[in-house]
Length: 118
Image (cartoon, rainbow, N blue to C red; front, side, top):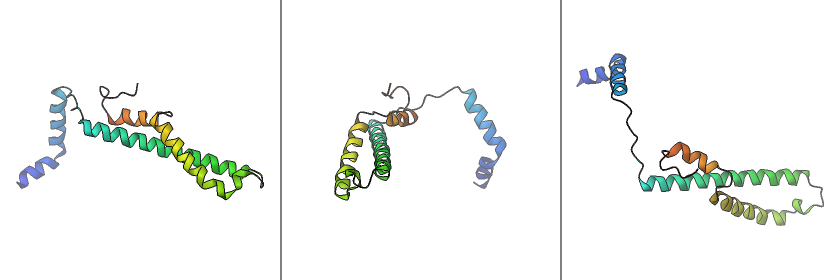
């Protein structure tokens, strides 16, 4: 048992195994399950929604900072409703994959055959 552990730690053994694996030829990756694909797609779209929402929030804060004192943008009564509207808009835009952030994430997570982003 100790011999097997020492053997697995030997860099020459690992190098020989890597060479044997390379000589065997490329192995096609296993297709992910539909559950994984659905979860990855949902997570990617939610991240795009978060990204768009954060961008809209930063744009709104910049507009507030640059607005004159009597501007409706400086009114705190409007800010909660505008924040909610920004989040709804971000969710809608992410659902349409308007910015392509979700598509870029899915290109990294899913194999090309399942990637329906093109």
